[in-house]
Length: 63
Image 1 (spheres, rainbow, N blue to C red):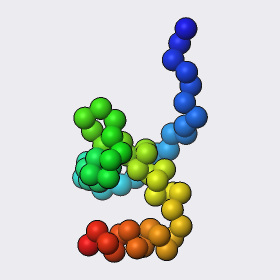
Image 2 (image 1 turned 180 degrees about the vertical axis):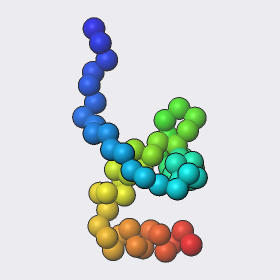
Image 3 (image 1 turned 90 degrees about the vertical axis):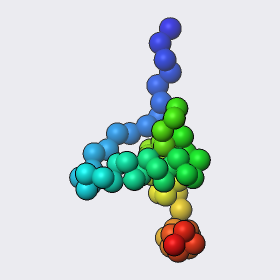
């Protein structure tokens, strides 16, 4: 019996060379983890589920 399929979609984006590591670090700091690394997919899901105003408050509170 194989591994169950995850209900996930893969996307590709163009970002600065250091952005993937920065996103992994942010994800890890916020508790989105896969093994020993930050889980950027879960971080992006969390961001996408926020309302714009909530996201603005969250960003401002981290500064």
